[in-house]
Length: 142
Image (cartoon, rainbow, N blue to C red; front, side, top):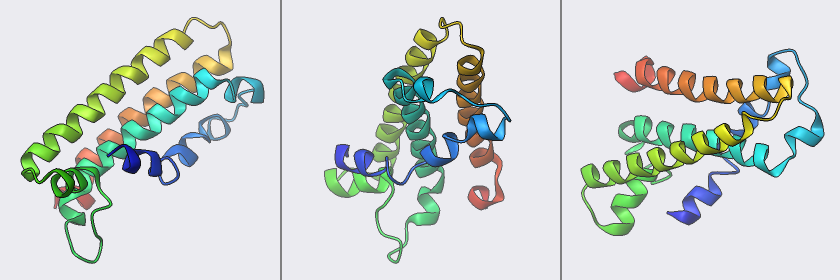
């Protein structure tokens, strides 16, 4: 699982999330964006959204031509557990990572830099919007 989560760093929502400031028509200063604390919070937001995507898209991806590039299916395959148990474990990974994101967000929220605060709100909005889209999209609800 850790290898999968590490590999998903390259194939996650990180590139989309990295553009929050540009889409919002402001610029987060490079020294702020590359601060390890900000980078970590951004990576956590990307991972939380990616795991949610894996959970929502699991049924759609449970086909031989797609394989097990999906956290619940990978857990079930590797550990020989039921799909229901694998989904529960995936949800626990998601929730633990979300709590870690919230702690990182909280620690950064005391920095009096308007662009950073706007970016942090963008990260929260991305997570919420991504979850809402996955929850309501006909792509996953059919």
